[in-house]
Length: 135
Image (cartoon, rainbow, N blue to C red; front, side, top):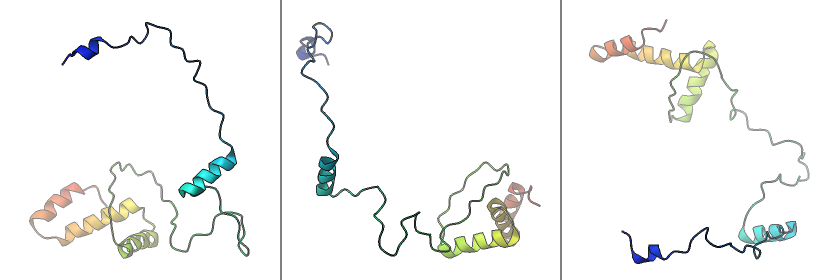
C-alpha cells in the first residue's frame, strides 16, 4: 500500500520549526464565561441561592425511607450478585434482615436454602450440595 505521496512527505525534524506565532491566549473573564454558558443553556453546578423561608445551610433532608444505613460486614463472601427487583420485594428483604439482625448475605443464603428445601426431587439435591455450608 505504498504510494507516491508517502515518499514526498515533509520531514518532521529536518528543519527548525518557527513556533513564535503560537502563544497562549489569556484566560476568558468570568463574565464572558457566564454569558456564553447561559446562552448555551448550561446550568451551574454551584449551590442554588437560598430562598426565603428555607435555610441555606446543608442539603435538604431526604424523605423518610429513601436512604438506608450502609451495611458493611466482613463475611468471607467474594461473589457479587446484582438484582433488579420490585420496590416492595426490596423493602421486604431489608425488613427481614433488620428484624432478624442478619446481614444481607445471610438473608439471601437462607432464602436460597428455604427454596431448596421446598423444591422436590432432582433439583433440590444439587442446591443442597451447593449450600451445604449453611447452618
